[in-house]
Length: 356
Image (cartoon, rainbow, N blue to C red; front, side):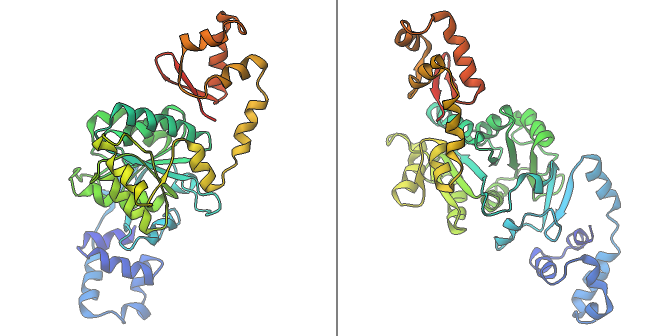
């Protein structure tokens, strides 16, 4: 990891970025034919970097199971290179980025879900429902691991064994918020934790707006689940908009300040209004018929219950609707069957709604 020596020597990111653009490997800098072209100041800096010993530091990362990926490494996502000030190094814990982040523009299933830390009950339930639906399309769920919407989206992805990618604003040894420690550990084991900050970096407030460009850069589409008119998630939306990403927003009550940001994005034609994952699927031309084919395989009792769940329905109301068609003692087992098949979700205490 020679490039890291330049950072340790105090070279500015802009200079390192230029050198990375000209040379594929760190060693190329010291070839006689290249080195002799540099000015005296750069030569001095390079000599200083070459004499720095980072072996102990690298051992620390190895012990913490953290990989350092430079912008010139194969695992570094090309999507991020489109950002003007793309991060020089990514500190990654978990699975391979190449395994999770789709680079084929024909697939486009990297979906970011972001929103306010102060989520309302309505915002939470809307986010949960849409993320659960998205996971049936086998998306890579990207978020920021902040409180509120980010935590909700990633928690659903982890619980449903989906592909969870969390981009954080601190070193990977600084869990923030601390209440997310268990979620943090689960993602680092079965998903991916990403930071551009080295170990020991505290979660300073200005780190979070900056990390939003990584979320936007990795994503093919960005969903704003709930946001105040000047919420931090709008930074992600604006960045994504400038990168020609697909932007989506969940609409909210007009008298809820926490949805003013979402409603404004829709009103200003910067985001497409969505109420379900199928709205996103249609935009990306995902195979919707594949999911709908599940319905044709249902038995008559399952189809009947499924048809009655076009809107959120409580168990007692559902039992009343089908009491003369399905034995009441079978309803719960049928509902469980529909849940296992991924056709309905339980939205609250004994309340259900279909996903398709």
